[in-house]
Image (cartoon, rainbow, N blue to C red; front, side):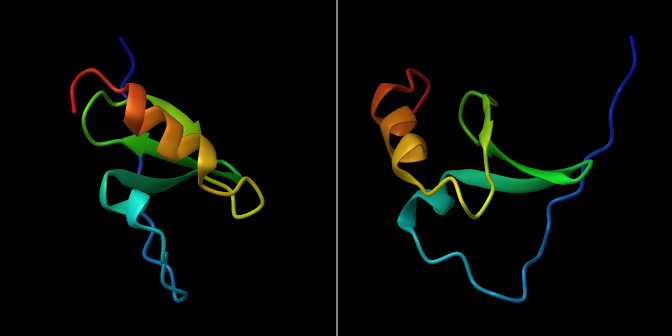
Length: 64
């Protein structure tokens, strides 16, 4: 079993949406991933993806 190390990225620009209170934004390779703090599901965290899919996940997240 191989463990991947990921680091939470601290941005110079602040993430303003309230959904980021429930997600960690991590840089994996050359892309950003949003990881749910409740169920650890990985979703797109790039700046061009928006946050609607993150909000929809929180509505359906059973561990929240």
